[in-house]
View 1 (cartoon, rainbow, N blue to C red):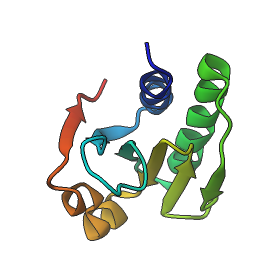
View 2 (cartoon, one colour):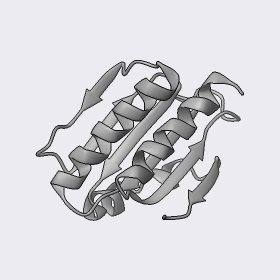
View 3 (cartoon, rainbow, N blue to C red):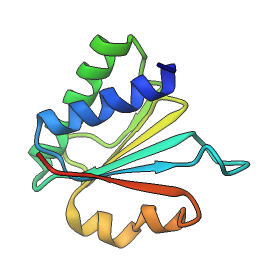
Length: 118
C-alpha cells in the first residue's frame, strides 16, 4: 500500500477512535496545483472533543505510520484545528465553523468521499 494511503487510513482511524462525526475525504490527486493530495475533514461536538480528536490522530498516525506532523494550527480552545502532514491536511471543526467555511465545496471538482460514522 502506498505511504499516503496508509496515512489517510491512520488519520481516519484516529478520528473514528474518538467518535469524530461526518468524516469526509477530499481526493485532490487529480487536480494540478493542489496544496496536498488529500484533505480529511471531521467535526466534534465540543472543544474538548476537538482536542481529543487531534490527539488521537497524532497518536494513531505516529504509531501506525511513523509520519511526523509538520505543523498544527489551533489548540484546545480553538473551534478549528488544522494538522499538516504534507501530503495530507487534516481539519477538525465544531459544526458551526465547518458549515461556515464549507471546505468540501471549495474543492467541488475533486472526488469527495463520505466516511460513515461508527
